[in-house]
Amino acid sequence: MESIYLVQHGKAFDEKVDPERSLTPEGINETNLVASYLAKIGVSVDVIVHSGKKRALQTAEILARHLGVKSVNAVEGLNPNDDPGLISGKLSELGDRVMIVGHLPHLSKLASLLIAGNPSIQLIKFRYSGVVKLGLINGQWVIEWYITPELIK
Image (cartoon, rainbow, N blue to C red; front, side):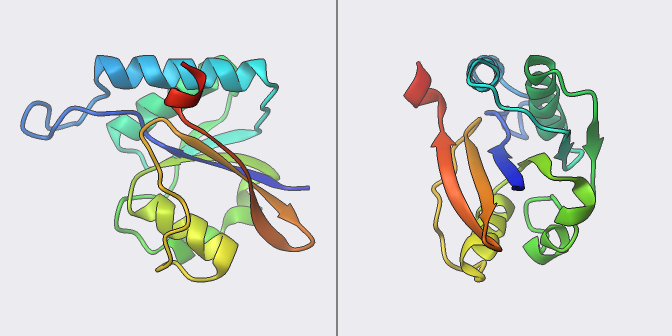
């Protein structure tokens, strides 16, 4: 069975404070908390992909460190306003167990496209450093679980 983990990047500084939008100390702490929990419950992925934006890269690196993932790559099609169809069409190329670190509204649209076939329906209320696990069952993507920092604090 294939699994996809959709992760909204950690909380980042406002563009006026930091034009590159690095993770805030809270964003780093919450991402470490979630990543540590994922490692403890045995989450295993082959690759972590991200948009290339600093906040997504930093989030991906924290997750990779905790999960022991060597392959962390920036890929096209994960920016906030990108068409979710771009990445959904490439999922099979990414591997069977992939973690995608991205942004809103893209992640929400991608999840809705995969689960319901319609990117305009909001099915998941994403949250900074939150992780949604989708599983492919009988050819249909389903939500297996959703972890947020609040659930494990």
